[in-house]
Length: 447
Picture (cartoon, rainbow, N blue to C red):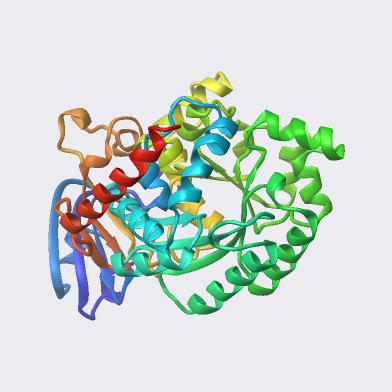
């Protein structure tokens, strides 16, 4: 934006050594500044073009790169309280023999609220400004996100069987629509339907979800083809693969977000491309549970929007999107047997704009462009592991760590400054976590 269009005062002017807007793709702006007014970016300018601009606040960040806030496109925030309780187990044993029993005993609104607060604290400190959450008591996550000033999409879970949050599919769906009504005008809280997986939700609820998602104009976020066992069980039970069943039910379309997708054949990749569905890649969780490998390079070549997610802390065991980017890049090359697969700029795009697109929020966030909300992360590259700097995007993916995040803004509001949380109370949160640790450890030791 030319300086002549910034004659009005701005709220914040940030000067940095590098700005990586993500759109246009693979662009690096040297010695640029970002101007923010009324929560939105109003200009990306060369440093010399900012002279004369009146700013309420002006910030110098030498040795820093500014990027769009990272988008964690899949997770279960409250499960941060279950971090490390059942490691080194295959998915079904991990889920059925450990996680579900622990959840049955401990999950409550308080558990979800304080677990979400822990997750939000970790994500903000690691440069994540928006996340998708699929878990019980989503209204508790909404309240915590509002308190923290963080952006979230709540994929309200739907299951056929009862849990502490709902008794049957009808009640889950009803609560999901109520949640949408409560936050339809919120700038921070967005909603989606979160049917857990094809093997836990029957046909009639899925048909209703498809119809309601169209009416409400929201995504459908679902674990799909997570393991070979899931696919084999479906074929044995009904004679068709899960994705084929979803296609028959009318769920394939641009609203569908397929999480994991480690078991896709050529026909299914072509289907997802044709219907403009998205995939969320969770490489570290998939590797830890030995669930399989998502062939990301093939999906991207087919034109499929692929986002990046951490999954929950119980199966990762962190919410570090820098670690996830590095793993995705390296694993993508190994799976494709091609060192040129998943270059750094592509992986950064997966963690930002592609994530925003999967959430249906690409017009608001995911890139640093005038008119978009000012969700921005600053990363300090003056650390031994990121010196010298020839290409900051390469360093972001292959060398940088979450600890190098110094500042985070969401809608132009500072939520992390010099590495310190601005909207949460860390000492109080630590006391809450210690209490939950004592409760959960006692039961986990008996398993």
